[in-house]
Image (cartoon, rainbow, N blue to C red; front, side):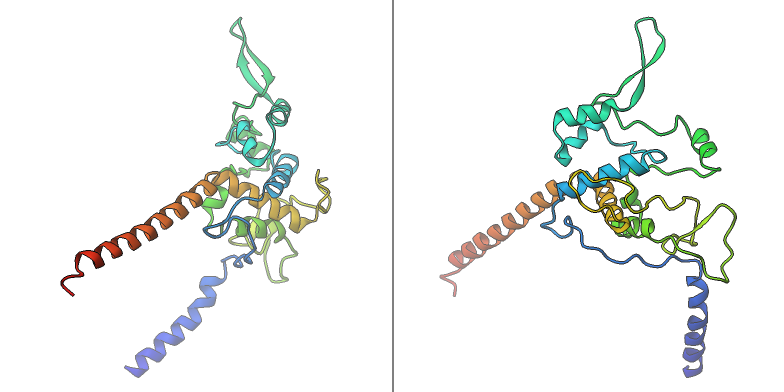
Length: 250
């Protein structure tokens, strides 16, 4: 039995590096305002994140499940949302039945960067940029993963064979990613004056994308808190009632 346990331990010890060889480095944990049952979104952070998405990411990545009107949840006024939407053109049918372009309005979904998948692949050397609407829900580490990925580009190890046209990223599974580093120092000029460092932009856009994936988070937290308070109050009432009903028995 002892020999069997030793053999199993040695087998696991040998197998572990093999299994881990193609895995990505776990992303570092970051502080997020929306973590925990009392978490809420930081509107200034979300607006900065939207600015990064708009100026850097939207050329390749869409937000298929969001409409421009949802941006009022970030603290933008209705007039600001109208102005943001109007920067994009969407197809419509005129009175003659012809397809023409018009400025987008708040009710429109975010305009897609490419008309279809083939056009997207043709513009990105065969790679298909994913939609970012639910990206933080589709990854186990959520916004931590997104922020880490955007800052994880570096030179590959000497013994690492990097395929042509690929970039080395220590946080990406397999460490090879088709997307070039999207962020550079000062890539955007924040309206609130916050220095646009790469870690700052990565954190902000990850927070924005988490809001895009879970815009009802604050409402959920509020409902959960109310339910907990109700259950606590109900427990006290039921306990008092039990003591009163069974007082004579005791």
